[in-house]
Image (cartoon, rainbow, N blue to C red; front, side):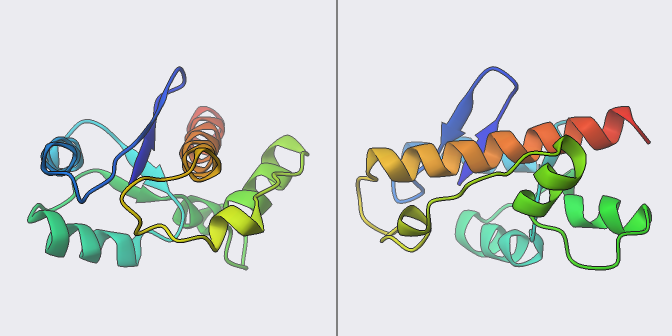
Length: 129
């Protein structure tokens, strides 16, 4: 699981009890928006795996649909639409083994960038309703 602020990105490996506890606490806390893309399945997995009901979760695709975009929006398309830039994602990192006990540097960077890009998209949409 990955979360980001404008200054830092955090990657939690949920097989570690301490990480699982902190992640669950953050996800269940109200008042902190957890924004991302394609979160419907993630919410179910979080409830099952962490035993918490995620609060203040916002699927950014919903905001795009409210603004008239008809096709499903992911982080790459959102970055292109909002910022006029290409967001490159490593196919190698995306298809690597994410269940291993220790993630590679490229996996951590991939996850952190995904969380940070979603945050930037959220801020752009929230500041320009």
